[in-house]
Image (spheres, one colour):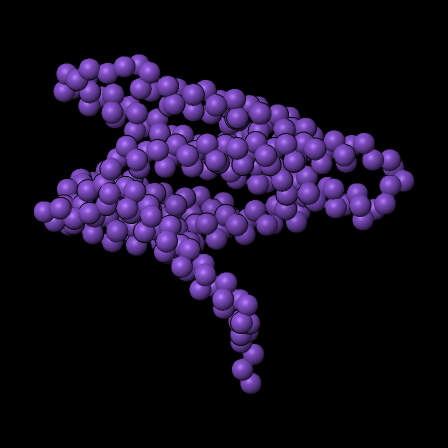
Length: 255
């Protein structure tokens, strides 16, 4: 008996519309960046590419702030509830509080990734200008400077909010030991979910990193990019996530 789930007509229509939308976005971005193979060398408009990065960075920061606001709002509602309040309503507010806090932490880390990328590109551009004796204006790096400041502001804000909601004192720049102790303060269900997610992340990285090697090799062949640093970073991550299991094996199966 075939028990596989079939897509409804509405789901199929939405699926194909999604493909068309993604294709249109890819085509639009490709055209905007001026991607092409001139003389068999992949080229694109780097300035427009960085504009996309800046837009994504701002969007991720705004989403982070929105979820932080929502988490704080529901936490205030939860604290304002009477002891004889409806149990289901109390749990729903509790659930929304931690759900929004989790989303805020996730998008904060996404923002950090974009900010680090922007800052690194700015540093490389600054180095190139100095090396080539080109003139530059300090205002060129205003965006990176703002992102750098926001990085610390958001770091402090997200940890303050976490302290308020979880009732656990955690420094803005915690050590590994502090983070481990903080994780052990989770309830059993949440801690188990984190363990499962950590396992899936490592498992998926082991599955996807070989494709990164392939992509880097293709880029090296069709473009003038030097992918050596990318290969080194990918290899470093690949080795680390696997060697890290040695500590787990020694700790769990020790005498």
